[in-house]
Length: 517
Image (cartoon, rainbow, N blue to C red; front, top):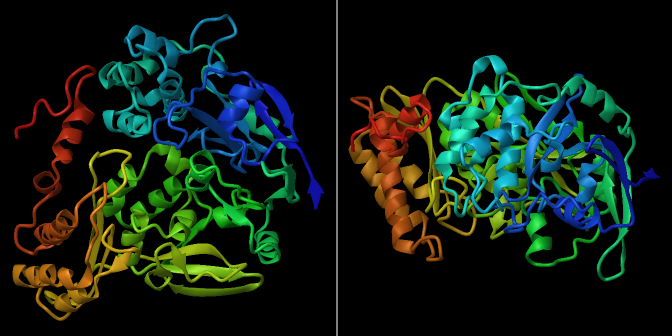
């Protein structure tokens, strides 16, 4: 095992970094070490987007995948072997502005300017992924790309107008990345062995950052260092450092293990590697279950979904994690590995208590298996929160029933935000199984929820609100899936007509202006 400095590509140059704490954030490195102060610090927890940068990674096929991420919670060693793009990269060689920047100027998309670099980088990532022949991105694509960027004074209308207009400018060489050339340059940084970065923490203790490339080596290191923190997307551990000022000790990074990023499907199971990003994982699940589309869109923001992993979200075990209710309702299984041994267990049995799981010391989540859909399945998942975008759930619900001749042969109901863990509703399920799928059965299950859950009051919602809305969501599920005259999304989701009209609206028109109340 070799010890290395951190090597990455930035502003067209290879950079090599060492003798810094592994928990130094990319944002700190940019502003304090490189004096690239275009990237701003706002919340230091991945919520405001002022620190947004773009990371490029070779995709193994001769190209490069670009991901907008929050630099305030990304640790510096995760840049190893990758390319970092910041707002300083966008200015052309002749001093003129990139089309994204020029559109922001022409559309008056910047007032105080503090959040502008983050918006520009999110738009630049969208610009790079946009097919030039496809024209402007849709309003929904723009809203999703910018959901993690907060504006405090300009207002979003001119920023959205800039995102619509950025593709209208005549591009010059360099405005769109040459991904093949970039992949070749990143090839010079590739390591085929375990990257081990030694560092000294704030207490003066010697620590190590392990970044293995193979699954077997990851398993060996996990067994040898059971006390090490497993790091995936930093969307949780990053806050331990930036908000709680905690020392993490030795760190075992999962993001370089290609086998743990694989997503595969056979006739029965969709298998999602633990290190697959939330964005990739939800895209795969939505192919089988388009009903998860809203949860996918509303799960944090694109930069968080680009960095965070499904395995990390499951392992975290938060009672308000949005992925778990849907996975539990679908009957997902977790594949656990310790050394050379593996075991599989139902996800709903994985949670033993508040942030307590069935993982043994030295064991880790290797994959999540999601059953493929069947014709007799009715499935929905819903999220309630104070904001539509980038907000934590007050209540998250998922419902899955199998029907046979109009009767419910099996039922799985799971809620987040209603207990100390993501939890199934055993009493409500029992009220449904064997019954005809009717309003009477739905109301019986609604009443049974009082047996399953005794929610708490906190800053997000009261216990009464949670109990009532949980009942209402189950009733909504009935309305959407009943045999006679099921209600479509436009009748049960207030946001559907807004997005429908916004997607087809001309630039500058107000979303939803053509819809009636």
